[in-house]
Image (cartoon, rainbow, N blue to C red; front, side, top):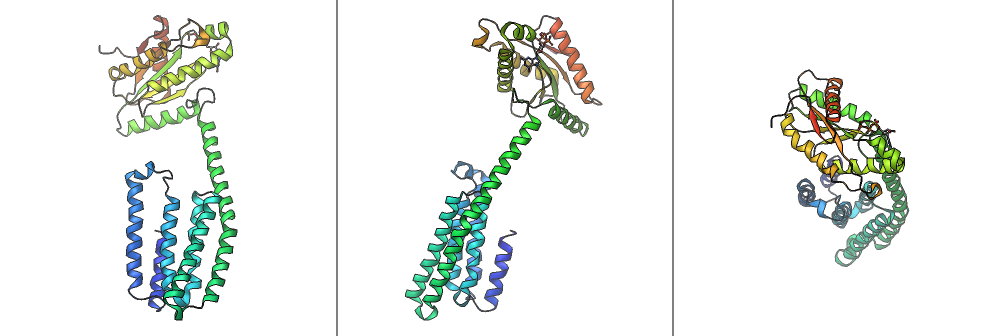
Length: 336
Ligand SMILES: Nc1nc2c(ncn2[C@@H]2O[C@H](COP(=O)(O)OP(=O)(O)OP(=O)(O)O)[C@@H](O)[C@H]2O)c(=O)[nH]1
């Protein structure tokens, strides 16, 4: 909108001043609006995600170049000024395109203007001065050829910056070994969930899962194998979680999970699925040794804070460890 509105106003003014035929601008604006609505509908419906380039940048630029070529054909006395629109289109490439793609778009703009000149020379020879038009064409082509690599470089820097930002965000939020969210992120997430519940959102279940006898694994197989076990356990638990559930590495071999469930009975299925998924893990480096986890769980109650929730889940985990490990315990008896 921020782009189309100034262009639409400019076209209306140019038409009002008599440089474009009266019938032209309303028709042009209507066709351009319909075409852009098609792009908008594709994005809204998600159909664009099936395309090689979901942003459809090149397709949108191609349509815009064609639309400007139509203006150029009708613009007669002010054709030279209208050429600037082709430079504006090229600038849009900074959002996605590589230098090669930008040069291709520049070449397309140049070819479109050349076609307009050829058409005008054959159809309206009295209204154009070919030497002036071809001089303008050469200037446009040279400008596009210089701008292409410059815009391409800006696009490249922009891409690198967003990649770096993503990496920095990941490093700040994720545990480097397991890829799970880190303790700091968990604290923020838990505060957010508690606030949501205070505002009346459905309760959630908090689980602490702790690998059994992990010290023994480190001592028997070495820390590198211990690290591998942590990674495999985290991966197995992530696989067992549903969309919307959350997992963070709480400490050494402890993970906190937030499960979307209203009561402990409901979350028992999820907790058991986690426990069994880890029990089934086969890690060649451990030989016949099996990995198990113990889980302590609690459900949000009105007035809870981060520490009351973690405290109750920890107490339940303690009971799970002391009742033989490889089991799920919750802070209130579960309805069987
Ligand atoms: N390899 C590896 N070991 C870790 C890491 N973080 C913590 N540990 C080890 O995890 C072990 C935890 O041992 P404990 O707290 O005694 O617990 P445990 O042996 O699992 O016993 P239970 O929890 O009672 O079943 C310690 O030996 C830590 O050194 C890590 O990132 N990598």
